Length: 208
Image 1 (spheres, one colour):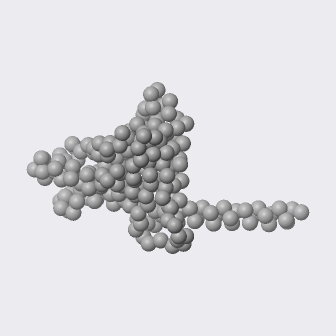
Image 2 (cartoon, one colour):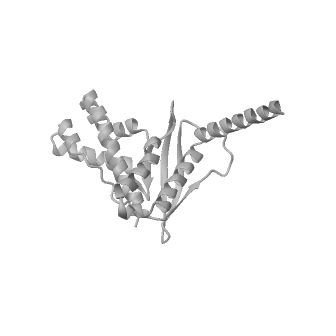
Image 3 (cartoon, rainbow, N blue to C red):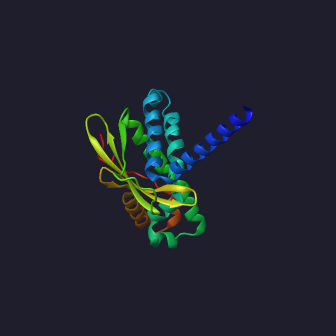
């Protein structure tokens, strides 16, 4: 009987491992699972938005931060010209600055969506393998309106990571890049001053 229990136990572990591997390898499930986690925070922790907004936004950040390839996104926001002008230390510094500003912006925006519903658009056919780059779409339902969200994902050694987000037609990567370039020009292409004055601002992407 003990041997039988061990057999089923190991079988269970194998099935769990297979399921986790499939989840990590499937970009649609990767985005969908994370969306469900964020919706859980938005609904079950709604009271925190008024009583402790920092804690509320931190809960959102904990879910969202591991999903993004901040080094790649930050380099894209700087653009080739300013990335090459920047020193190695300045590039690393901007990754940290950009990550903090993006998470603050995204968490604050999500917090205002309240009890909205987010639905992932799965492909009609059962795809078993994916390219290294893929787009996963979602629909945000605020109750009064529906808005499209598009995630651009790239697969690296750590799995699928978000490299850009388009919300209701607003390309956040392009928006931030334009802001960086304008800020750099205002500071006579002084990268150090540009980083010191960086504040990401994507507005509400037309969502209200």
